[in-house]
Structure formats: C-alpha cells, structure tokens
Length: 390
Image 1: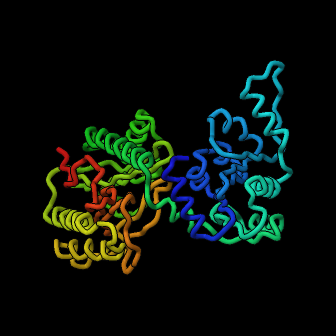
Image 2 (image 1 turned 90 degrees about the horizontal axis):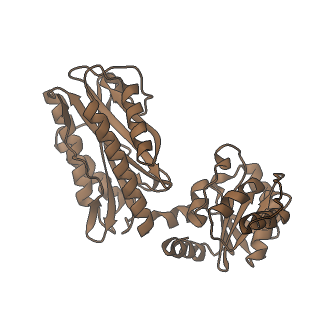
Image 3 (image 1 turned 45 degrees about the horizontal axis):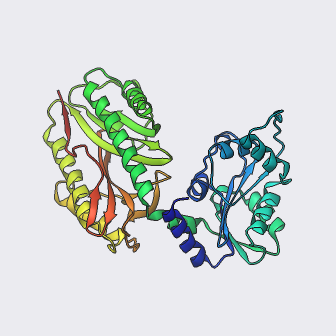
C-alpha cells in the first residue's frame, strides 16, 4: 500500500468509528492491498481486505494464495479458505513453503477466515464497517451471524470517499492510461476513410491499446445515425461522406481507467454539425474554467450547460457533465445539477458533453483533468476540435 492510500484509509476508518473496515468490491480490495485476482473474474468467490489501526489483512480462496505470494503482496495477515489443493515439492523453495504454510492454516469458510483475520488484527469487539458492494444479501447475513456479537455497518461510501483523491502513483497510472487511449485513437483516425466500418475501426483501436500494454474496455465507435445511440455495439456500418464519427473509447493500465471522446466528420462539416460541435466544445471549456477546489459539482454543471446553450444548443439538456475516474471508469464525484459536493485537490475528473439526436446525429467530447490548487490541469494531449477527414 502506498503512503497516500494508507493515509486516506486511515481517515476513512477514523471517520467511520469502526474497529475495522472490510473491502469486498474488487476495486476496493485492490486499493487496500494492490492484489487483483484472475480467479475472481471467473468464479464468484469472495476476496476481502481488512484495514484496522493495527494493520491490514487479506482473505482469499486457497487457489489465490500462490499468486499473491508470487506477486509479493504486502499485508500483515493472510487467511485463506476453500478446497483447492496443490502438490508439495520434495525440495520446496521459500515461496513454495510460504504457500503451503498459509494453505495449511485455511479456514472452513469465508466468514470464518474473516473472523480469524479480524482477531489477528485485534478487532474482536465493536462495529465492523463492511463494503456492501461485493456481497449478496445472503453473504451479508452469513457474515453478520458469524461475526456476532460484533455488529456490521455498510461502508462502501467510506471506501469511495477514500478513493476520491488520488496519490502520485495513481495519477501517473491514470495519465499513462489516457496517453495510451489517445495514441490508439489517433492510429484509428489516421486510417479512417470512406468504406471503413465501425467494427474495423474498433478492432484497430483495441489492437493498438494491447500493443501499448494496456487493456481495452468497452467503448463506442459509431458513424452517422448510429452515433446518436449513447452506447452502441460497433456494426458493419461503413463511413460515408458527410457522416459524423463519434468515438468514446478507453482502456485500463495497471488497473486504472481512462477514456477519451472525440468527433470526426468525413469531408467538410455542414453548418449545423459545426454549430453543435462548437456548442459542446464551449460547454467543456466552461466546465474546465469552473473547476477548482471548493467549487461545487453543481456549479461546474451549471457553467457547462449555460455555455453550451449560449453557443448554439439552446435546448441542450444533461443529467450530468462528468464524474471521477480511477480504479473504476465511473467514480465519485458526479458533476450533476444541484450537487453540493465541493471538489478537492487531487481528484481526477472526466468532463463530458455529448449530443444525442436519435436518427440524425451524435457527437461527443471529453477532457480528463486533475484538480489542483490552481484549478483544472488538463491531462489530455490531443486537440479538442472537430476532426475533419479528407
């Protein structure tokens, strides 16, 4: 755990008044421990990370003991559970010895394993704050019964609050992810022309992201009337002269997400296309001007909509104009109407203004910014203007 995460989690623990906080959602487990399980993407087995005043613990199925030892995951206690077995080498390495020591002390169930981890951390009494995001109601009930007389309190909001402000390592990962997404999108734009299909363009984007060592995430590349659909799958629709092409694509690098939205047109834009894009651009730039520590999320929303309406989209409506981004593609805070949440230095925000006119056209523009004491520092390197394709 990096010092920044330790400080943020310590503040969250103190604010909760709990004896310990337990992460269950994969993103929160990773925030606490740095560990990401491959098996968790396939099997619905619980992974739990514990934060207490006396240290941290990780609760995993036995099948994940070997990868966490191999990765050198640094926590104070590891407790495993489950039926996975592996063969003991005749001449074990230190790593193999450690794996089997942990597996030999396995608990019978996830709830038993969590109880053992809490005991090891001295959290035998009081309330335990549990992130409800990764638990079914039945799993919550099993934990409540096993951990009694300790009480459980929902704690997903505590982890969300801790993760809002990013540390140096997180900002570096987010910046790199965004750079990869922009480079991959630029490669797509360079080869885009008449007859290229949405599926071909998306395949090129994903290949470029993988070539740069990142993981593509679900996004949109849509042409003509398809660009008006907010979240379309890419189709065999081919780009034709006069079409708008809307891109809203992203990737993850070391677990941190980035996305970029841009719009292109094949040939010279007509007056309405130019006006609408100019309005979205004005809205994004007004939002960037408004962002500063202490400014409310609702104030940023108001500035963006007022500018877009004044610049040529008088009837423009949105529920929000952006949100935080980090270990998840969609995080707090939400830049929504009337939201009183004050922005904080160190937050990374995706500012977005799309236009969806069903059956006619769609376009979009996003910028990713770091909130600093001086205002918004834009992390994007690509130009914001409407891209004109020959």
